[in-house]
Image (tube, rainbow, N blue to C red; front, side):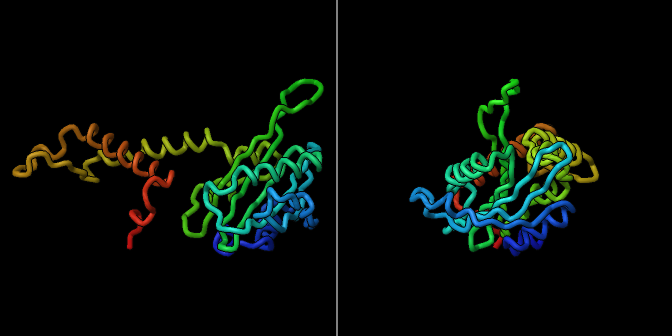
Length: 236
């Protein structure tokens, strides 16, 4: 997983799937003819690199595509989604993994699946995309944990690895545990009020910690939305 993140290449991606899924078959196919339209001039090397047959008759297909620019968390997401839908519509598949990458080693790892309406005629209402943006400059903790531990046994298990609801629940559980830990005397967190005495340093500690947490969350939110320069968060 670390090698994939720090030294991304299509070859490393194929090796990751071979290690994660014993039944993964490498079958490369050039699909550039799908993106010859002028609307996709920033993309090239669209390739099917392999597939995995599942016991329930589903099949996972893995595609890669180069982005001829610098990927960011927000760049060309709509175009990438359009390319994926075109390929899957022509291939008559229910789901696939698409990895869009740039020359700097950044990549978007997406699982795209048809959203069936559940009726007998099996018409589908839309496609759903689940995605992680990965860059070697970040820790990528969630991606490592969720994708690294994914069983890849069927399409449902893959979708579960992208579950926002589960991620949110885990985050708040961890945050609450951290909050409880900070209140313990062993940690010894204080918020001095009157600097001439230490008697009031732990008064209203719960309220003070909640205020601190909400401020930290807000700062992280504006950082993730790129509303402030990243340089402000550099340690050096």
